[in-house]
Image 1 (tube, rainbow, N blue to C red):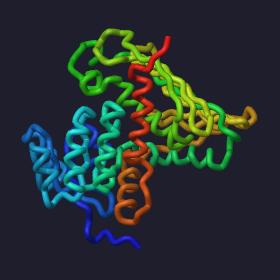
Image 2: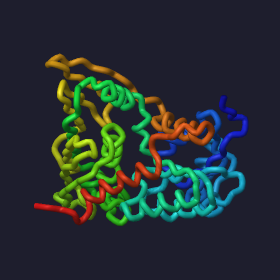
Image 3: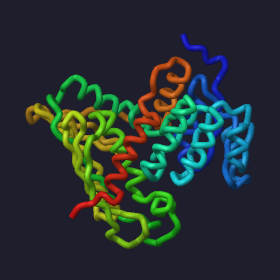
Image 4: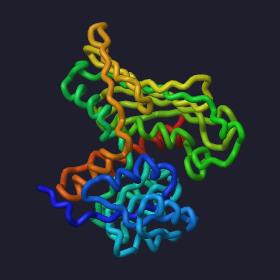
Length: 330
């Protein structure tokens, strides 16, 4: 039986929007975890965050938080371009770490982070939390039960119109190629591609086209790709962030039927068997990273391996590099 009487004290680097609702409260609500310190480059904002969330200590210097003896583990929730910088420092400090997704802007940097934690023999988790959400664990259950037969193909369309921020050409790290070379693809498509490797297994080959169609910002905004998983399930996707419609549709085809679902929307899962469609409705928890955070707790206390880690996230970065990078064909 687990003993949570001596909680693991987490420090958060980068207490921005994602930590306000999605993740921060999950760390505070998970038995065996507590947050002992936060860091933000703006000391006033760091203090405000700490005060509102009843956290004892705050910093405006990441090194001080990482080396604080009252911090047992570190959650890096900054934009991707600083993940390697802070991640390597946490690995050197020998502390367990969770890094927001994507693990880094490139496969090369992701691999460097992964190898640093492997060398330090220290756990590295990555916040691909959809691997733990009930609606997606239900889909995995259906696949494991061979509900739609032998798997054949997965396809995903994700398209969105440009946002008001995009149209105004205001600063936005998500469309700054120095931070996110793939723009919104890095931020959003990474979730689905990572999920597919969890559901269907690793990818052995991938080709992609990526470009900028709108000219609203410097990062790329249009992508298409095809790939094959190690079990020979094929895949295809297109992601466009200057489209006229909001579409988020994944189709999983099998020899006996089809499963249709969304990565980001909470619409019901559709199960199509022999022409009969049934729906399964599963809502997300209030704080969507809760199950992911609990999975880290289960590994750190009970040695039950969490589904999202440095190795799996590095593989996702490898897939994304093939789509966003120079490996293009026309």
